[in-house]
Image (cartoon, rainbow, N blue to C red; front, top):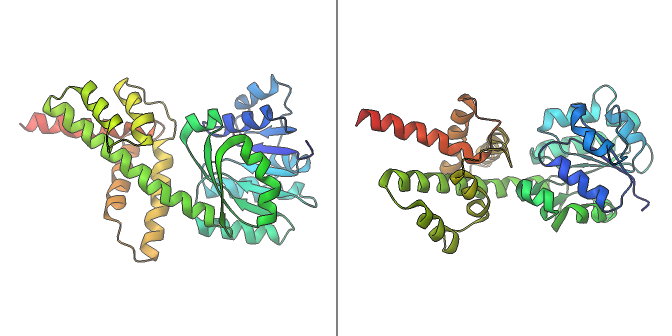
Length: 297
């Protein structure tokens, strides 16, 4: 294949996404700040770059899957960053989640240097990343989107061109409203069920078969019930996304009391030192609250 792909950011989501690109046969080079995370790729003879600059020099499409906008800015514009390895025809794709405003700002700065930019956040969790079934929401130039689409198809099942730059991030933030509130609904339902003495196996059966079902119930409820709090998506990352939602809603004068409350709950969870656990760890906060209530009783 003629498209040479560079992938920066090999975390919980990024590593399996990059691996699916490799399996699809695209020439690939990877970079990660923590070098040990590149070892599975090195064992497959995938080149490991020493810097984002080298990734750009050796790629026609550079995909970034990092934590937040400041991390992306450093990767792109910092010392030995992507822009230092720029060349004609280079396309940068941000597949992390931040905000439409950041996407438009990065687009403007990159275009001044002759680099095309797409924002392409994903949803589907670590399971979707491993299985190549992510939903990918892409904002940016249609021609650039069509060039990169075969790479997206190696990672995702539903590929949506959302519109101009920033549109992908907007769709992702809207998605996070539903994901976050579904997680809260699951946690509160399970907390009530446990306190009231319900048969949890029957609660699970009802929620997975009725109107209460959702991808959150399917993926996260079994993890909660088995005591698995490893991150498919980190609690701190959802907290970050919810902050972007609240900031946008505030600017647009859109009332979102549910999301505003949820942000405070995840603030509390992170304050407890649980930000590196999965979003389902929210139930630990509720467990602490109910224990406190039992002590009062």
